[in-house]
Length: 427
Ligand code: PMP
Image (cartoon, rainbow, N blue to C red; front, side, top):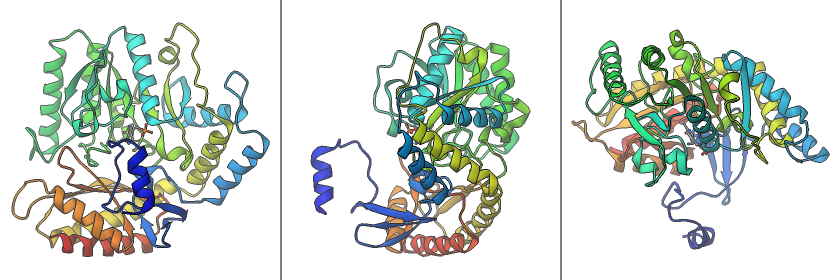
């Protein structure tokens, strides 16, 4: 055990998850690579759980941050703040939500917490619909709507949460159904729930579940849900913390794969927009955003330094069409991983969109989840210089691949080759 790991364990909570038996101390990064304190170099296929959206140490972001920090780091949102207004204007326009208002937070958790506050205030209901296997954050209220119970400590949240099917397709009651049958079964489940309760305030859902293992619903699921929700007067909140900003390649937002439904009533964002700086937020139609009947504030949400990072990062992403890059390079990578999986017994599915790719591992010759193999692949990949993530339900058997969106074809091939060797070693 390294000295730093021992000190970490002595002073930080047991429940603060750490990857690897011998955890890595990352000291610097460049492009799609990071280095640890011992000087080992890694190709980063996880971008710090998607926090590095474009590239590590992107000069445009570093320059914008240091210039802003040299002027002023922050005072308060009690004064006008030009970078905050500018980033809000850009996000409002990109959100697809009509008459959009934007509120900045410092994390995805706080963004979802705010969305819950707005939805419950607007609809005067403390009931929430959430998806089974979902993850929405770690606060008192966010754990109360997180269906993935391995990431949701028991909470006595006063919210009443009802969980809806629609995340997981490879296990559970709807496993093996075709797209249309799957959607019909999930809609039926939703109708059943709504037929027996007072209307909940909102349904919150990740268009592709992140922590849950990059579970990818059939296109149109949320369009079908929307029709039911509208009939019952229930708002739809898309949690775009992992799926936003072009990550899924085909679309700028994950909800757009369900575009028949139109934009959600609210969307929440975080992670990559600041390329590592802590920015989260909520976009909502004005009538919902302005539901609160008293003043409110977020002391650090919208600080000029983080907003400068967001503006520079978003500008870079749009200028270099990184969404298109995610579609092209991600498409090649999915194809390559599917070809590798076809030769192995232990891969149930390679799924996802763009640069959000899940590889679900099972015990050879069965459908049983294989968390031991997932852990072994993570370790083996690390030994060969590749960082990936893992996820899924309580049995964490899905490898998660979500590199910075500027990934090159050569890097995708390098990572796939390492992953192939790691998968073979773990068989
Ligand atoms: N929503 C989703 C979909 C997430 O993946 C996460 C983080 N993994 C969160 C919310 C919470 O974000 P944060 O950790 O920034 O609070």
